[in-house]
Image (tube, rainbow, N blue to C red; front, side):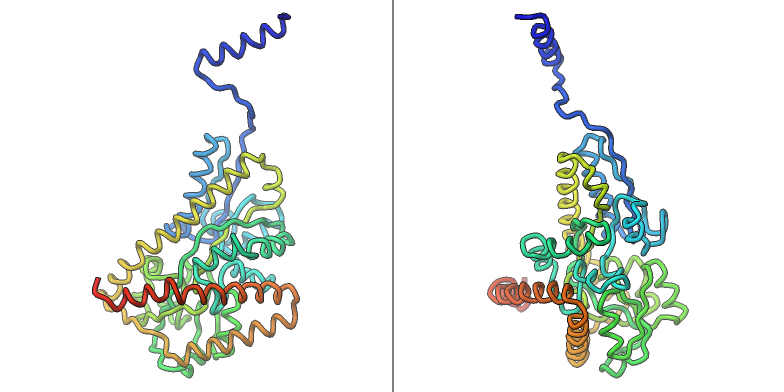
Length: 360
């Protein structure tokens, strides 16, 4: 045995004797910044980013660290896409439909009127064509996407006055999350406003807003909307399931090692699952509290739903006529939705309908 071989074996033996495994792939520390579009007070949505960050750090043994910043800390809440395009930050957490002013296609990464539920969205994005189609679109903005979670079907929002028919919507000033909803509601006479959640309460209190939609009972109660608008409508037909996304700068992602890419994917999966589970756990309790505190819970009249559907389909047709890419993604989503609705008739829908009519 030559001297070099002997020293090599002796070195390995010493490491093993000490009980320390050799570092096969010693990696340099990676430090990223994530900018969220949401305030820290929303532990459901902003909490998803915190869960993801902690999981990344734990899985990497502290070698991959993503600092999480609430909306407004590093940049305005709606400035995150520009920051990713310019490589100012490595990652963001947001609702893609906030950026339909750049391109209406952004809405398909989050929610569209009369679109997919949370489970359907998850299936389309991860096992249908959704993620592939959206990432091809996002690449134009230097973005790769991962799910940050889903809110589930949302409520229809808070109104200062009762909505008895479509006519009551005319002239209404309403905060909406963004996307194609504003265009559909405009056809019904609603004046849409897109603003961060933290600014809505004061606008409702002052009367510069007549109504707002956000998410559901737990978040809405935290934001205090029940104190300034007594009528709480359902369902949010514009968000059958709102997908939140982690946007990653493509250059930053490409620079990650295979191990860190796998860690990031796993951490996003953990955070996404946690968000929907938390919403499903806390929303029923919050809804009971709101009703106990005199919130007037009401279903949208059927004519409002029908008018909303008609207006939405007109909006989709208008965008399809202008953009082949929009048409491809929309038609793919609707084909997937038709199969999902068929399956639901024989599974979730029938089972849930029975359970709701039975004393549990």
